[in-house]
Amino acid sequence: MKVLDDTRTAFARELGPELRQPAGLLFTMLLPFLFLALFAPLLSGMGPSGGGTGTGSPWQWFVPGMLVLLALSATAGAGASLLNEMSSGAFERMLVTPLNRAAMLVGRALKEVVILLAQALLLMALLLPTDFRLRPLGALAGLALLAVFGIGIGALSFTLALHSRKQQTLFYGVQQMIFFPLLLLSGVLLPITQDSAPTWLYVLSRINPATYVVEAERALFDGRFAETSVLYGLLAATAVAVLGVVAGIRGMRNASV
Image 1 (tube, rainbow, N blue to C red):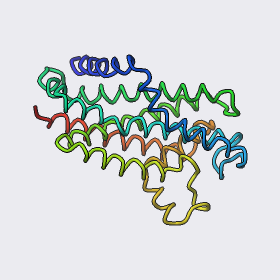
Image 2: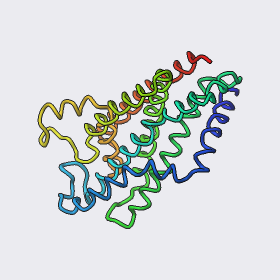
Image 3: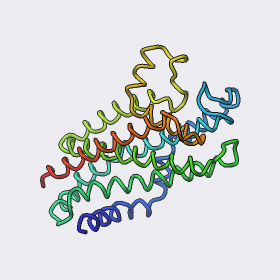
């Protein structure tokens, strides 16, 4: 099928340069590693359940939060590469090719997800010598959920880049204005619960779709599949993915040379 072939072509075109520059892939992991380095010494002083979520080692609830942080930091800025292509004229040359425009968007988003999953696996591998206990089925389900969420955030970032092509500072301003509230209100560092947080903070966190993804990741990595938090996390990640892909495909189709 032409769409699948075009998606594979767009995916290979995007992934090739990244593989030739592994230092760039590691650089996107800097933020999660920074949080791990700064907060890991504090984990030993916390209870084993991390404020009522998860069981066993504190790593069991802290690591899933770091994976969502990685998903946000790795995919929220994906549109910057598209802005660079628009500045150099490479994107316009892509538009005049017979490549399907929806495939251009999907291929780009899949590249972001492949890189995200590789970074997540590396992060988990580095933490295996700690008290972090890896449950394979829960980890696989958690990574699948992370991939769905990453597709959505990456596609939304591309959409923002398409609408900011004539004013690049708009992209970075809006991206930062959305990224930090999504991050800080998601409870990636500390769970935001009704008992531990002020009412206004708790309400804001419940509006944030990333909160539900974080809670689902913590349940899955703890081996708890049959919980409402997993269902809510799946619904939130799917909603973000559908919104991002639909908006991104529409933006690609409306893009002009």
